[in-house]
Image 1 (tube, rainbow, N blue to C red):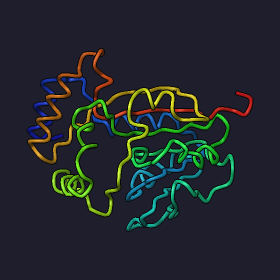
Image 2: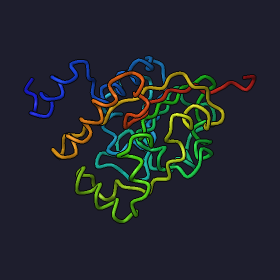
Image 3: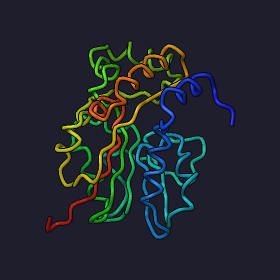
Image 4: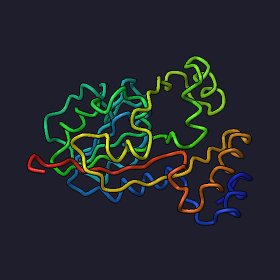
Length: 229
């Protein structure tokens, strides 16, 4: 497998590094069973559902924007999910919770999950300076920066409120859920060389375990509390 120059540099500095999407996908696959029902909320192009749906009984992507391939997809908002109570074994949110105005916006996720069903999400971490500084940038300017630096389509950029984007909030601010695990992962985006260098330098700073909680992304797994919990 041919590696790009940034990947080669990273491999020399940290041979044990695992890309964030690999970590996320491995975590998700470890949660899947042949009889599981999985809902990917904020699925984007729904490619992950298409890739992994064979690992469970039922898989569907949900988003406010319809993907090019609408197979296994339902158009809906996270605050109005068209599923019955206690329906899903697994629900996933990829870079969704930073856009929620309140932890209460997860009430529908809580309703749809079965008792002891699991929620997996990945989001940004405000303790990372590159994420934290984004809070003071006007939305219109931030939107232009994201579009041009990270080559993201404008339709995929939404306002961010960052109500659940610190380690403390992830541990304590989500009612109805019990934390199973929290992991901090680096974002080493190589789309732009300058951005890659900045994030690589921050990854080096956060390589000691003492500083892992300052990494750019938070990956968290929760289980839904039973009524008696």
